[in-house]
Image 1 (cartoon, helix red, strand yellow):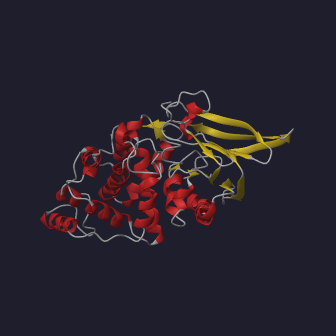
Image 2 (cartoon, one colour; image 1 turned 180 degrees about the horizontal axis):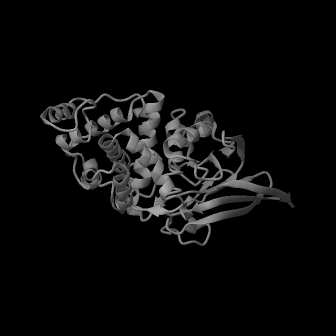
Image 3 (tube, helix red, strand yellow; image 1 turned 90 degrees about the horizontal axis):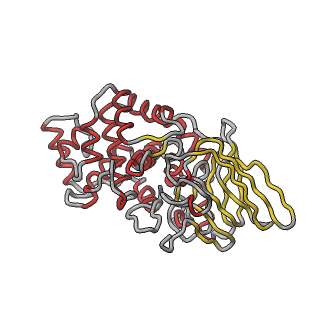
Length: 386
């Protein structure tokens, strides 16, 4: 298709993993998130190679120089979240506290990135168990991740078993990318977009989960990260012209969908308070489990849980093609962490903070390093992790 394919060659095989277009390159499908199905993937590969896919490995058998692998993903899955990797892998296994099988796979020829990749991906169980405390029970039958020897730089939330490019670990271990991709198992995989313009309900939440992880690790609170993001770019920066709630096809994976999208969630948290905010984060994946939703559905859900009108807040942070002014930032609790919601004093503090050089939270470097996770090398700007 115009010389492009969802397949990537590796020295010992190949990988199918892409977004938003992927499935049509390796099985007949209606490649849209609305058309979900359970999956059985059965693949024969030359003996000595392995086939990695979604879900639980049901069986493998070897005959006449070929090995067949049978995988099953037993919950509804969007077609683009199906993945297949063929090659020679080192496999590690584990079980979560709840007995969920964990399988991680690493190409045998990752070179200098091998140690950092393992140091990151082997924390999958820990990260998933922490995310359950934020988003509720893990929604699928398996867990893990895989790192094939590809030249790309992105990562992808392929259901139950995220794909990670080795370049994600070129500068050392980075658990933040694991947090991002595993958060998608709730926000993006179980609850998927109804249309691609609703991408914020995937990416804004995955980015905000990185902020919450930073908060947990003592490397900068979500509030501090929000203040930093708000102050980092002036009002004339094109970043603010992208509308996370409807970014357009050309900006589907733009940095604003992630960072401004996370700002919207911090504004919501400050507006409704932690009790309602975290009830929303846990309730949403349960309410729409294994289905699809729009940004408007989330706004209505948040209003119902909090009992507050929120349309204006979301319009400001998701749909206005400009940087929210200091009064709006003060109302949202941004750029002035101790400010009251309104009033001249809060507005003045917000304005002063916006003008001051922002203090960079310790976690920012690791978070910013994941900005390539969704850079799928088809002309999209901004991010390399979906």
